[in-house]
Length: 265
Image (cartoon, rainbow, N blue to C red; front, side):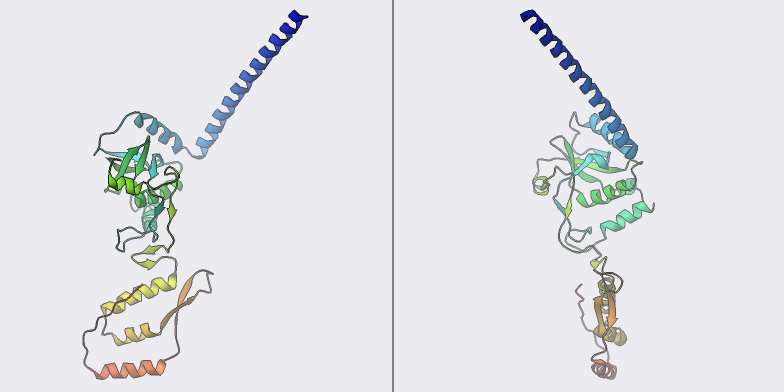
């Protein structure tokens, strides 16, 4: 009886082992098929994978300039500028303008001469230039069949600048936007009324002695848009018209003098 039980046991173990190996082979086949399907949907992933395999085994010398596929780069910051705008403390162009220029073919990714500062950190390529990387990532998302590369300059991760920037909580795979409104040169990009009022205000500041323009600014207001629930448009107030006309006559009776006017967006 012992020999019979032992024989049955060995046979069961062999069958179990064979079944396990068969399941492993089946899983590998499914994984290969899955990878093939993913690459069919996003062909440039294969290029990014090849680039990473050939560049992560050793450190690239500091100061080296080279093109890196944007899919191989990670963000360092946890959040991006609340205005989604370039410039450090000063008004500048919208990040979305760069995306639009790339999308329309007005410029190419390789035309961006200022390289992204990139540090090798924990086996990853971490970009400190988060705003340009954001624009390039947006453009790459619209072109899954074309590899988008960015000129980069390898910098050290052992610096105060990198330590302060390296706040990502998801290993640089995503970046969030701080609370605020997207802007272009200080004007709110998606609030049409406020954008137009901002530009008119800047115009009035450049022409402080233009009576008609200043009277227009007195009456100018923004209101909720009838076209978009979260938007705004411009309107003119009907109140204080007599005061406005009186002010106009008074101003025309006096010689013009220089006045300072500061428009605050």
